Image 1 (cartoon, one colour):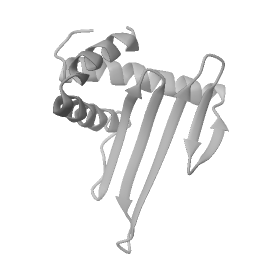
Image 2 (tube, one colour):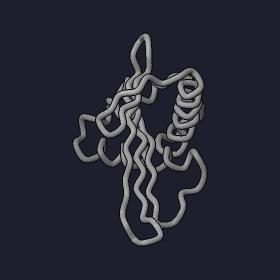
Image 3 (cartoon, one colour):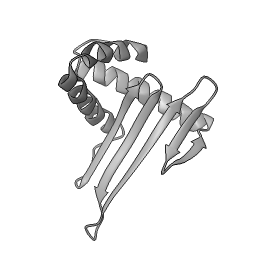
Length: 120
């Protein structure tokens, strides 16, 4: 399975302004559920923004009602993967890179079947 296949499908739909944005939102919802159920008072998204960028976003309300959010962007380069959080760059270690790869594969399978109705 290749992530580039999913990218080519989304590229085709990118030409239609509203549908591309709607598809990213739907993909993000599916991606957010890859890591288990999303608890109440929480929003979780995980999605492929472009051919070398993955995004993890989470919003939640704590016990005292304060809102929080955290966005992590993963940039895929030929020789490394960078993780960007709060404007700081971190190099991703081998274990985290493997976890990202496995999440991307699962994301690809689920998005392909649930949104694009294609069998892997």
